[in-house]
Length: 393
Image (cartoon, rainbow, N blue to C red):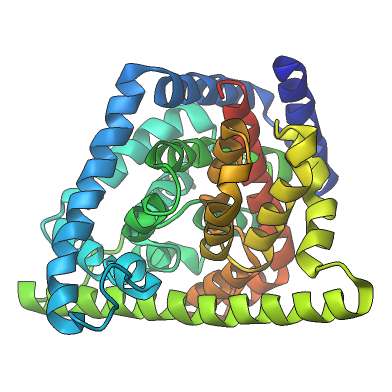
């Protein structure tokens, strides 16, 4: 039964992507099949082997130590603010982003990250059937951030045709920034975070091949990375500290706004229709949850979490998942956890359009024009990754 649902899930994802394909005749099936096989192997390694468990535990311990170290600075400034034995979400989950941002800044400053990004991007380009720029961008977005990645390719960005621009934006929405991975790991199991990050790279390329097929000629396959402006070490530290704080505050503001708005909408629907808005969304998304491998009796609850993520953001959905996961099977928790690890939500359309518009006004308008198609594709990326892991859970 598990294998049957997996096959049905793959077919449904393919058909949903095919519905909005820009050129069905140009779809390259060989790299798609190769990447699905790679995803299945990686899912098995990360979720069903001691080696995979060791990798997930190692990364979890690493981020836990980073967050613990960040706690020293947080306690110095906010010590005593929280009640004994009870720490606010902002202090324990969001503010540590500042310290993680500093680590990323240091690795960038000493040119360690660019080397890693180029290396992984080069390897990906050998199997994904896309160009070097697309491969680099997908890896870079997962490390330096959704908006910041466009700065590193700003000279090429203004000259890219619409199809390649879509691919870069889709990659940015399908991945997550390394600076907030530690925060995710405080809400869902680290092994699912690690698995989702890796799978989303390949799932993103697969969906792009179907929705947005094209061929990059050898002359076009050029990667030009813009070096960061020359600055002193302490200037860089200041910049990344402020960047980390800005991210934490923006996420906090979005959580306050989205959670309050969702509560208000739920109250209105409950008062007039005796059913909450989230419950309605749960029914709408439940078929997707089912083809992802979620048991039928838990599909509505899972669909509720999925819809919350798309309509609000992944943090709100993860918080909701922590509240009900004790009532769900471990299989459902694993599948939904993998689905949640991405930036596929409505607010990301504005983030990406704003980031590209800041570099090229024309390209920003182009991105805004295909915003909904971008979100549709990125959501399918999350669904595909969840379908893949359902085989090994």
